[in-house]
Image (cartoon, rainbow, N blue to C red):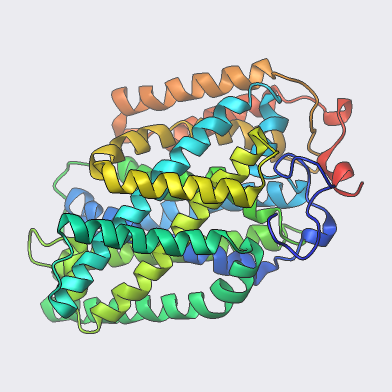
Length: 445
C-alpha cells in the first residue's frame, strides 16, 4: 500500500489484485479493533438509532440493536478473516469469485458508492461544524460562503491524510490517540443522557411502545444495514493483519469486537437522545444541548473524518485495480477532490435514498463471496477465469431477491434472507480452487 515501510506487492504488480507480502502485514488484534471501533462510531449511526424507538418501542429496539449488531459485525469479521488469510483487497476477492472480467462491474459500483458516501460524510461534517460555530461563537456558517469554507476545510484535512500512509495513520493516531478520545466523548454523552432518562423515569422509557410503522425484522434489517455497508471495504484493511497460526485470528476477533461495541453504543445513544429531546429537535442540536456536548460532538466530528478517509481510501484501492498505472495514493487524492466538488454542488440529502439503494447490491455480492471463499481452509484462487457464470448469476438473482423481499414481505426484512440464499447457492456451486494458483501461494512468492 502507499507509503508503507515494506513493499506490499512485487514491483510493477497490481497492488489491489496481488496478495500482500508477509513483510507488509503489521496490524495486530488491537489495531483491527481500534480501526473498526473508530469506523463504527458516527452521527449517521446515532440518527438511525433514533428512528427505531418511535417505530418499534424501546425493548424491541434494544433487542434489534444487540442482535443486528452481532450479526452484522460477524459478517464484517468473517470477510476480514478471508482478506487477512488470502492477503487480497476487496477487488481481489471480487476477482477471485466472479472472474477477472466480470468483477469489473462490482468494482466500479463499489467506487461509485464510496464516492457517494465520502461526499455524504463531508456534508455531515460541514453541517456539524456549522452547528458548533453557531452554538459556541454565534457564527453564521450556513451562508453560501460559510458552506464553501467549511466544506473546503474538511476537504483539505482529508487530502492531507490521504497524502500519508494508511498503516501509520491507523497504528500511530487511531490506536493511540483517536480511540481513547472517542470513547471518552461517547461515555460523557451516555452519562448525560442516561441521567436525563433517569430523571424522566426509566420504567416509562423501557416500556414505551412502538407505533407499529416497522416490524421487528424490519428493525433488525435497519441495524444490519450499517455494518453491511462496510463489507466492500473491510478486506482492504484486513489484508494488512498478521496471519493467524490457529483459530479465527486477530483480524476476525479485532474487527468483530471493535465494530460490535461501536455499533451497539452509537445506536443505543441515538435511542437515548431521541427519548429525552424535545419533539422536532434534530440529533446534532440535541447533542449540543447536553452539558459538555460541544466538546463531545467536536470529537465525534473529528472521528467522522475516519469514515470519510476509510471510504475514499478503499475507493482508491478499487480504482487502482482497474488502472494500476496510477498509484493508490494518486487515486485517493483524485477521488477525494471529486468528493469535495460534489459536496459543494449536490443536494446530498436527496441522494441518500439512491446511496442506500446502491448499497443493497453489496448484500448478495458478499453472500456469494463468503459462500465461495469463506468456508473451510481451501486457498483462494486468483486469475483462474474471466467470468464465473454461476457466481454472476447468483449475484444478479440475489439483487432481485433483495428487492422482492422489500416489496412483498417487508416484515421479514431483506438483508438476512438475501444473504442466506446467496450464500447457500454459492456454497453449493463452489468449485475446487486447484485449477488456479492460490492467493496464499502467491503471497509467499
